[in-house]
Length: 611
Image 1 (tube, rainbow, N blue to C red):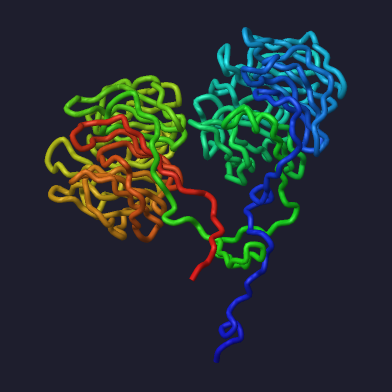
Image 2: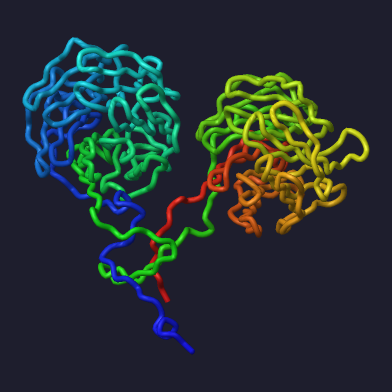
């Protein structure tokens, strides 16, 4: 018998606005009061209802070019207040409207090292100076406890702490940069973006800096707001053009939220209130106006409906039925920075934003010792391997990795700084094998090509940091095999079993291999990355050269977006939501420097339902 629910269906909520993942995700921007003296590269402090603007630079025809004028905002309009000591651009600012701190800046001919404080009516130059003099710095905190980071001069990664009377140098940032966004306090601060443009972000815990997840959009000359860095907003800035993007940080990752109305760079911001209310002002857009006089205010809803994947609702404001869904097909490839060394058949480790490639070469070379590290946008040379090698494989992280097999039969270990010969060779010397692993003390090595008959191997070995131990073989022997995972949960895909190219896939559970669902396309030299035997990617391959990408969800393979450059025998690393392919042989070449990044959107979208 039919039930009432089966006859009538399910209840659809009526909502006045779309669902949101968080209060910040549901925030919107609105226009605020117009600044009296338009400018860019100014200092900012305060909150949405009590903000402060000082210093900065006008357009070239204005006089003075760098005004000393100071303005206060009451939540609706700007009014002039007491001037700073001297007009400078690229000045750092923090604090409140009645207790602000300003330091550094550029006069037009030189950087300055001065520190000034504001008491709500006038500015005082204090004896404490930053060292060296610098501009375009990040500044966060209060008049008695502040932190400044980065600059366009000096080493670029300087960090100093202010205690109300003096500046003291402390632990440097991991990456030098300037024109960053920043937020927080002197013991819990954050910076993001900066010159490059860069997407990198780092968090300060009072004694050291730690890299966290990157911005979704790399940019410089952006504004940052947030009284606490776990509620930071990264706003507007410059890529190859001015952008309006706004991103919210929740302490772990960045989420795109509502854009500002005016795409601009070199804008200023105040500290957000506990409810997420923020303010940005001034800057440079398509021209000096209207961006240089504009104020925009961000307000997050105090009450909102939480996003729920699969939810259907009726938006009464837009008069539309909507559904909350994950974007399909879910991921795309984009160009990354080129490597410094042309190579194929190299070992790899790490993630999309902290990757490592070592050895390899463009055949017929016997291999290289060259090692490179990737920060999410560019490759930099690191310390070399001890042995020139190609046709090897590697796994782990950028700071704890293994490189094994290939034309060098031993194992080398990486600690984030240098490579060390472990003295622990695999029991069977092999090349073009598959591998998995999480560190320089835990790995698995399977299949490949033996130096003598039988040439095609099914051998599997695991590493515990002190020795390799043979365990159960693959069911199908093969070389030029793709693989990923861990020493207890790995996956082996495709390869060359001696004739033709197999689509065979096997799963490792820490004890034995089990055959599972085949790939859609059998090729040799395919490249893999993934976390374990339930989540993996296989990319590219030959013959012919392919850019094809297949995703494994633990039970089946699905073809998704192709790489732009078809290739095989490249280096794969990362996770299914953030992977990387570097180098490899392309049609007409035996090696390349090309890098491509695989990214899956982390957010769901509200989509209008149509007939």
